[in-house]
View (tube, rainbow, N blue to C red):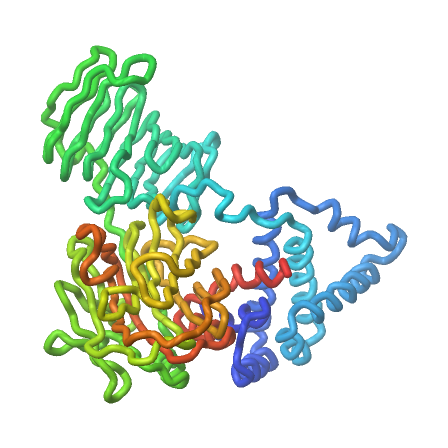
Length: 560
């Protein structure tokens, strides 16, 4: 999307823009007719998007609004009255837009106002969305290729759509799903698959590939079909179900337990299939037979590449203008160290095997391999005075759902002052939805307790997100993609011991030892500040990172 158009939409939704940027947009609106038409089209599309997403259409009420003056009144006069009413609401609702409207020709004003009126009408009249913590969300769609949905499908999903329990019925094509427990499920049509829970999927027909990482947060994932079931044991396997004939299974890696099911759904016979073993599960005869099945008969898990990072050239300058204590960009590494962008400030020491790939337009990031769970980066010197206000700002892109530490501030006793991590399953002692971000602040530093903030929205694998976790006076805040995701009252400020910055790992000596919480994915543009960041600065940085959530911000503004 054109950068000016993106900033225009940010201004329209009430988002933060600097005064100089607004003036530049005003100039282009005055002189560029094509740009004006595209602005009108985009705002119209935003309004229609909210209309389509409404639980029930409100065309009749809108028609009454258009015709309330009576059928005998000329249409143009009725439209003018509606325009006047909408304009009054716009002026009250979207303050930054007032400066842009002054420069638009009257015809464009009419189009923009009517489109904006439709958007505001449906945003304000539609019931609020069901909060995430009240929904049974299982994961998200990460890839879709040439998908044609059957009319009987309860779910018709696109990339980044959330998964809720229900039937997926594909006529053709492929779709890849990431579940919050770390499982990745790839389905090829024709297929009929029912998502029942994080631990149970039912397949009536289709070819499936299942990947359950060894560090998966759930150990009893099962795929069942009429007369057969496969229970994962830390596995990658293919699973073919046809309307006629036995179920076919091929274990690519790890092991899986195959079962023949009795008519009442209980196990009649079971057998553990080791790596590189194929079998047919024939429920009609109650047997599990080894078979020489070629790999080509099964769906191969596709490669899903992270989306490029659309970082604006001005992003580093914007960060440095806020005088951070430390700023690491991962553009170079020498002798196992990532230099600090500020002179005489500590570098990051690399521990273990990590990579520094290009992630977009020549920009590099650090990548933590899923198989290198114990790799991490740590600041060579501690931050000496972290007891007051602070802000942790960074970009990340995760490759799977699992409990993963992103950034932490730890004292010499391996205790956290602050930690930002990704969540998968529900831990026994904390109440939250999986697939969200957690920010915990502990003062004095400790290995448990403290104040927890969990985001009210999920993160999306293979997509870049801009994060700010900060203490601001008596308040803790977590921001995702320029939108405030959670906030709470903080404990009284006090002095804290020196803390080092740790990236990609929970702590140096986790308890139990396997609770490493290593990241599988990328980190970039890590900055640590000795003061909190204002809301407009956070929004500006998110926009420069290509992560500003225009629709989420507009939706929140409309609900106020």
